[in-house]
Length: 67
Image (tube, rainbow, N blue to C red):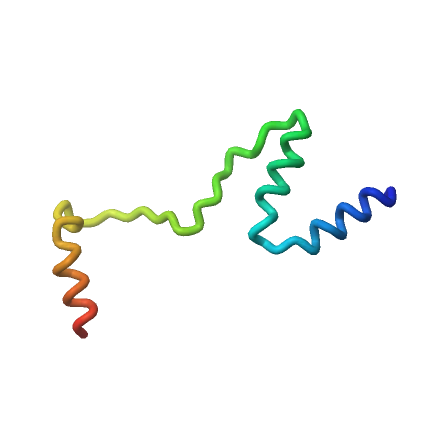
């Protein structure tokens, strides 16, 4: 491995997690490969519920918080 690649690996390892995405996008932009289709949505969730769940959210929260 060349000295430049070793330095790049070292520098990437020193980056905080919050700075990895911009660095990754910068490097991907230099390549002809498209970005993967996978999206990073760590807080996204989906579920089935009663139709009026959104309308009753305040009542539900009150009952859960009042335990």
